Length: 572
Picture 1 (cartoon, helix red, strand yellow):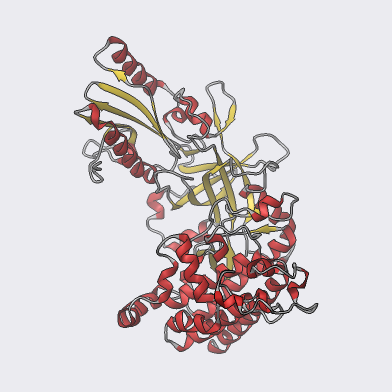
Picture 2 (tube, one colour):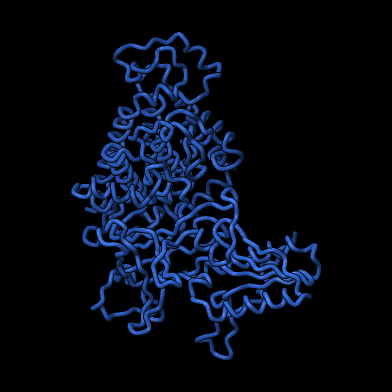
């Protein structure tokens, strides 16, 4: 199957606003067409449509789905490309009168139908009267039905760049009301610096098609909106945590206006109904279009200026992680360098960390024990995923999995650079000299192979130092980070308050573990409530996860305090 990734497809385009000399591009395409000379090339035609859609979604931020046509010799198929599938009509014979009539009918419908039936989102639109792009965010928490807030879109911070999936988009916005007649046109924004744009709006609108079949029976356990609302309610009055987690301004399911004039929830079923196509439930993921307006907006973790700022940001994130885990019984489950942002104070210049993206979060305090123990899918980013997550262990998921992830994040940045400047320095001066460090095994191979590598790396202090910590960038300012991860590893995998049976990271079958089979557990050990015959060290640690997590947080906060002191001294 050959794909032409550079070829601009034949397409039905919207030329409104285009000058005669301007050639239409992906931002103008209403539908795409791929023709082949043989019916045997049908799969190639489908593949080419999918490749075209990859380019349409990033260029059209208000696109929900894409229409496509394939013509293979004399056979036409009308297609819809949506989040998880290409849905095609039965073959239409263009040699027959009925076939040609079907094509004419489709073209007529495309000409006169509403924009939402073309695949566009009517809740993202250009307000001609006020000369600005606007987006509606429905607020399902409101007592009134179909309540929404309107925001002006300033920039698109993340585009829908994947062919299939959630099609997540993120917009920097500012909240407006009916009396707000100001506007910031794109040509004005092009003359502004990033800092100036940031001052205009500090609202992030996240737009994504979430799985509905991953929600639990209560409708909220895997629902990011419900979890964020719960977190806001529980932690909203804790001033010490302000700005460290997203504050929700409005959130809900997107509504599209139907031909009956009524608002309807935007779901995959509605998209397929446009084409009057139905697929078996096991063929298409059931998704619902959701949108969240939240604040503040942070910068990438790699924007820190030094190692001490990284330590502060990571400690802030894990402090709020602990508050959410304890106060809300919600586990984040996707600690990564992408999900910890920084925000710098305009007054003091000091950074604080923000823990974002609760799409993989899970409520762990309910009575449904399967929610806590089953790992039906691996969540997270490979280099940062815990050993239990990678191996899809049946051991209950606890806060310790996320603490394990933050250790991996800090190790990764310690090896490859906490910011972009150090990254370049390290790759040029260190990596070339020493070859690939052992930490590369955390991102290559199968999940089981990565889990095995991490077991070996984390099992003992000697292994960890020789294989991981000694590969950190050799600059004096990285020494506190090296000491921190060394202490975190010890408190997680070799905590002195647990029995020897609960220490280490190797599997139960390891010969090293057999030597500890006669180890005793006394009442002073945190894992003493665990079955005395339990030989799985991860199970034993899970039985006292809260105590170990408190211990880890204490280490992290102490490291943050020391980092703040060093920064204060250096700025005198």
